Length: 160
Image (cartoon, rainbow, N blue to C red):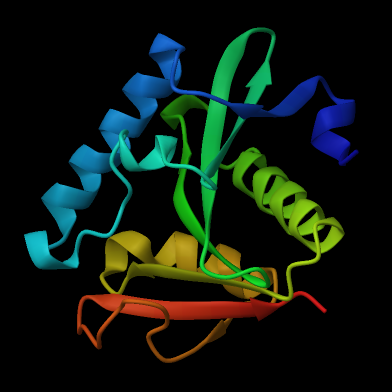
């Protein structure tokens, strides 16, 4: 349990049944489409977040949604971090760090060796890139189905 969970934050595997989760993911997709060209938007749709193997985690405090993040397996040992988002009123309170730490710990315990992600190269995405660097992610080449894209940065973390 991380320190934020000890302060009343709960992280759980979730579904797309709660209106607050649906709203947050819509805001996420709206921001991605407003910030990146259509061919460079790689956020998962609500339908894709419900595909087998994809796991959505949400964080809550006092029944209020704080944030969400998802992973999509690439192989038995490699997963991709997708759709990480914090609600506006909870930003800069450690929500994203707590979610990321939780996901890393869970993936390690599930035997994954690597966690990779794609994020934008624009200044809008700089706080996200800084967060990932803080957790040890390193820039890498495109992975899985991705192709080189000047609007994308690719990062990876060895979990072993």
